[in-house]
Length: 313
Image 1 (cartoon, one colour):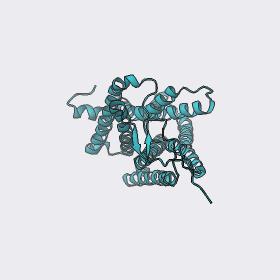
Image 2 (cartoon, one colour; image 1 turned 120 degrees about the vertical axis):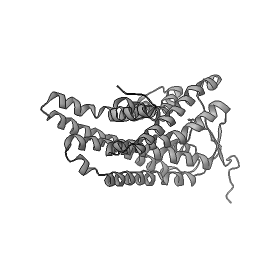
Image 3 (cartoon, helix red, strand yellow; image 1 turned 180 degrees about the vertical axis):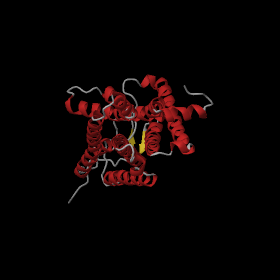
Image 4 (cartoon, helix red, strand yellow; image 1 turned 90 degrees about the vertical axis):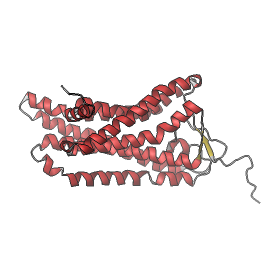
């Protein structure tokens, strides 16, 4: 007769962590994180508001920028509140259902941002390769269709993740390694077979990696097109239109690549360094993208300053 293992206790609540070794400074650390969170919300909402109200900004490039701002808002709002609740109130516990829902939104908005960066690289290629046909190739309706297709793709790609986690059993172990829930983190706590989760999680990661590959390929074609321009001044002008997007790509992918490299090659990984880089991935892109686009994109900068009652130079 089968006897159940009474030492295995079903887990219904997971425990998140703050910043190991710096628990005594959580209150002080929460101040800059809270400011960064508020600035990210304000910056992205400003971008959305300016693009929505200014008819002169109703162009493909700025529609894609709106999608990037929405992705950044989603990424911030789905992750930073739990981080702040740990730092401010020491609220470590999170229910299994809430945890699974959070990982769905974090991974969904991460893939959405990756997809938007890919679309924006295509937008820059079309603008440089076919400047006279740009507005006829990327019409408003086509831009909306592209945005919807990639949004649905992101949702469908990560939709199986919460269901595959929900079918697992969690016994005894319940301590996660971040201040928010991630699929690979929750999956490791399962006491039942998680091979399906492992392979599908790998598939999702490869899909996101393919976005970065296609972005790199698009910039090879952009560089080839720019080198074919006779005028040195026109070359610089064409490349300057890509600076904001290149910054956004680096801000988004550098933390991911750094974490992947540390996981793969670092013999003695510092838990503190891993957590700080992972937190930076969720904090920095939503904060920096509006700043980069306001500084480097004249049309955005002018309209933002006009809204603030200031004159741009």
